[in-house]
Image (tube, rainbow, N blue to C red; front, side, top):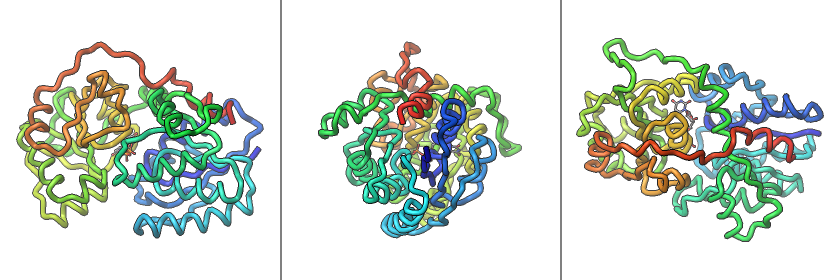
Length: 351
Ligand code: UDP
């Protein structure tokens, strides 16, 4: 059986790594063909993940990246359609909520190739997010939907998606955290930054709602500054360029480093005191490594973390950001929220 896996952005490499491993372990009958759309192309946003997570090298790289959402999605659809017509896979496997996800799902659905969507059913209910559009449309053309959470499963039912297509399997990122946590390694940090562990805050910022809004981005950096804490910030290339465009000065307590590989990110997550992020994946990883998280957004798809009071939504409110960085401390009572660590096994067996 041929499965065409479509990936293109950093979190997708991590999710696909665990599923590829599960194919190798449990499905010798499957030939997985990996297509990298080229959406993320910097070495530290792409190549490093293939090297350190031992993902098989992509069979195809479409080299589509750097354009607008419409340009990228359109170019990807055109190239993917051609590939799919040549390869004729039994399944097309897409992950998450990027333009690569949507392009893969649309190209396949119109060729009547069944689409399997990993991380289905997540909703922010904010249609201004490009990710939300990608998720909703992908879910509605998918033939099988793998939800990471009960909330996701319920969202799909609420949208009228047939129950028999809707599989609650747990979160492949939880599987990844279990597999890679012992392989974590300390990143190269600036010499003057002497962290002992548990004495710094880890921050990531890359969501368009923050990076494309100068006021929000300024307010976030104000909040980070006012917290007075030592903050390590592996900076996404988009954020870096927007900060330069808006002329935002990086506060002295914020240590900006280049994006790090996943194993280094795991080290930072496991060793920090608190996480401040607008990333979906990083919110959950904070929970996996028992670190409190404040989320630099007004809403989240991972609502169970907020309900469990492990995550506090602080938006771009500088006062709330500063005080939450200093004082937010959830109770240590935690229940497992993201499955049993075998989501990838369930996915490959289901296909
Ligand atoms: N990540 C990483 N290096 C970094 C920042 C993030 O490896 O410098 C990892 C992080 O651990 C998580 C994933 O990238 O597994 C999250 O991706 P991102 O924040 O880009 O996207 P989102 O999860 O918001 O879709």
